[in-house]
Length: 280
Image 1: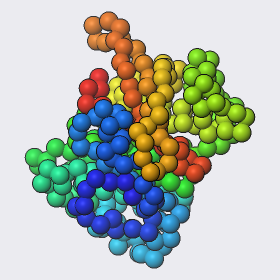
Image 2 (image 1 turned 120 degrees about the vertical axis):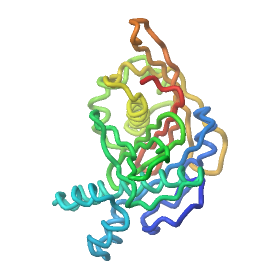
Image 3 (image 1 turned 30 degrees about the vertical axis):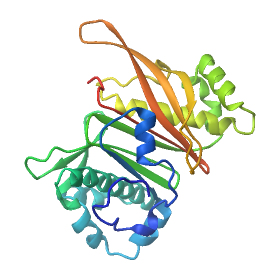
Image 4 (image 1 turned 180 degrees about the vertical axis):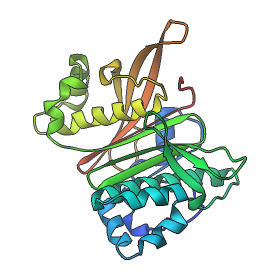
């Protein structure tokens, strides 16, 4: 589990990915993000095994809002159920961690994960006065991931490595980006899928943090530099630095520099980003 708080035990402990992939302090350092942050990863297959031992109403009542309970009943696919529940459990645990740091303790059933008009998830609460943290959710293969931040916006993405990413690389990887990746990672045919998946996950995380009516395209987010992450005892990590230009409300071009913390977990790429100055 990756977290920075001890407000409560996760109710489905056996589904947590226990290896410390990237510590929260390390991610904050890599992103130069000074505010509160947390995230965690869940193994969806292990979560499903735990949920099979529990009646559906015993899962719904303590952990889901009334709106979420209604939605859960509509889901008929077992795969969709475990992805949906995994993402919400992870997001609620991360969000309540942020709230607990500010002295606000709310049960999960008081929090609802809702999508805005662009499909971006946010936390809503029936409680008055408590400012809700920003959240981001992702799932791929057998893993679900979620993060929360106390200030600004966040984006997390988990991607299972497959050969498909090589076939569609022109959609998200420019020739200059391919050169940067090849120079930094000394890319070979054997690990090309893994390296391209890191770029894909990083760009997905950035698109989630943009918080704009029109999300930036993959090729609008331009990889400019890669740095090795600070030395630590876990898996290798890298800081991907992007430039992104858009037109502001006054018609003027604005260029942003964006950082993403990226790591490789067996056959998955994990990417996290957070900004306190994201343009709306």
